[in-house]
Length: 235
Ligand code: C5P
Image (tube, rainbow, N blue to C red; front, side, top):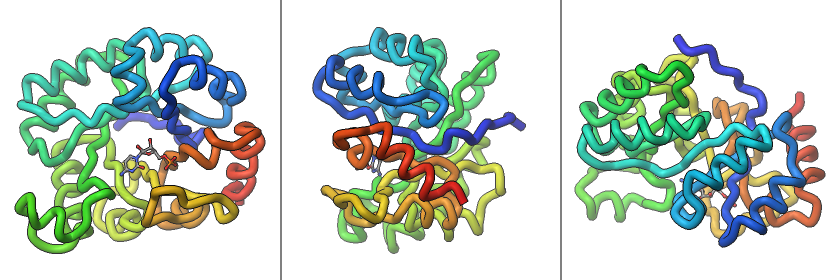
C-alpha cells in the first residue's frame, strides 16, 4: 500500500484567469501549510509550464482535470500527468471499471506515481439532473455505488461532498481517501456553493483532504486566512 503523507490537509483551489494573479496568491502561501489544486481553466490557458512554476515553489499539486474517455486514452492522459510530477490526479468513476483499472495500471509504471482519485457524482447535480442522465435514486446512493466501484478498481480515493463523507467512510477501507470541496469556515461567505460544511465538521465526517478556494484566494490576507483555518481544525 502507498505511504501517504496526509499533511498538509488543505488543498487551495487556484482558480484565476491569469498566471500573474495566481502567482501573486501562491507567493503569499507556504508549501508547508497547503497543497494547490489546478483545474481545467488554468491548465487549458497555461499548460504544463504553469505546473512547473508552482512545483519550483515547492508546492505539491492536485491536477484536477477529471478525465473521462476510453481506457487507453485515459491511461495515456494519466501517464502524461504523472510525467508532470504532480501529487494527485483524478478521473470520473462513471468511465467504468476498465477505464479506472487501465489508469491505475499505467501509473504503476511510475516510480513516484501521483495519487489517483475518482469523481463520483458531481455535487452540482441533484436528483432530477441525475435521473435525466439515467441514474435512479438519490445522489448519495449513486455516490456510494461509485465509491465502492472505485475502491474495487484499486484507486486511492474519491472526490465527494463533505455531506457524503460519513456514509462513504462507513463503507470503504480506512486508507481510502476522501477529498472534499464545498468547505466553508464558519465566518466566510458560502458563495455559489450550496451544500457546505466547516473544515472541522468535514474532517470529523471522515474527509482526508479539504479543497478550499475563495475563503483563502479572495481574502485580503490569504496566509492569515489559511492559518485561521488550520487553527480551527488543529484540535
Ligand atoms: O472557492 P471554492 O472553495 O468554492 O472552490 C472550490 C473548488 O473546488 C473549485 O475549484 C471548484 O471547481 C472545485 N469543486 C467543487 N465542487 C466539486 C468539485 C470541484 O467546488 N464537486
